[in-house]
Amino acid sequence: MPDPTVREMLVAKIDELVGMTSRDLDEIRAVTDQLEPDRSQSCRVVLTMAKVILDEVQLRAAAGPIGEAATSRRRLG
Image 1 (cartoon, one colour):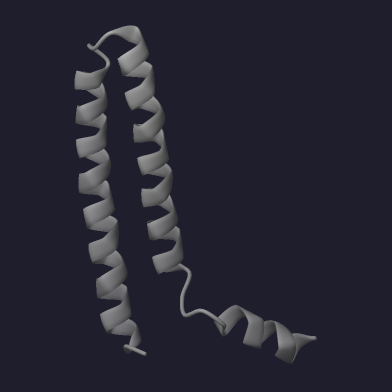
Image 2 (cartoon, rainbow, N blue to C red):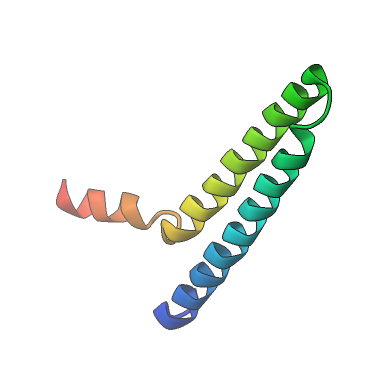
């Protein structure tokens, strides 16, 4: 497992990339909103799914190592 400083740098980079990609998705939405209504709606659904996936990546990266919370709970219980 990387030391906390490296981990923090990695999470910060993920946050940066997610922000950039999110802005790109907003720009794509602005363009696809100009298509025919059915095409525009179809694109909007997919763009929303993409944003949800980006949010998941960001949340999972920031959450910390898998199993860490479960180990802490066992010690408390």
